[in-house]
Length: 179
Image (cartoon, rainbow, N blue to C red; front, side, top):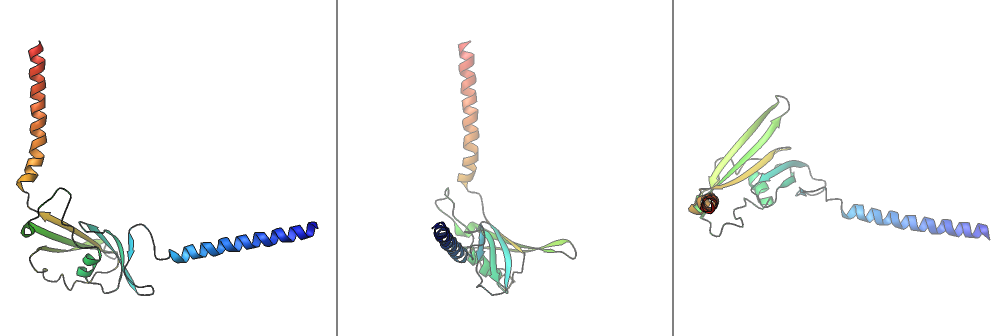
């Protein structure tokens, strides 16, 4: 009887461990393309890839795994393009917006960094060489959207300063009037 209970317990233990193993395998296969936080796979599995960092004013910054031969304009599109609207802006003058894209690569042999720079306005065509620029492994693409400062920008800086000065003057006047 004791031998029968031992065999039954061993059988149940084996069944439970195989079920747990099966669940772990399903978990691993369902998440095999989730490589990490902010690592985005654009290339198909089995395809040769380049790993490119995209930083700055884009819709989705991160490390992109893209097919070899990907153009700079494509990688900017994969990252949802230059981010142009923030919570504080209600109206945007597109003619005043400038985009600066820097592609930095590091040459291990010489120990030097090289930066390719592209600058343009939204209503202008891409600058020369940008549409044909092919990104390569371990490059960093930084995107920056600039605009000329508007009156509202200056006002948002000056108003708190004037308010602080006014509060200080009022406090000084109240203190001196009590004495």
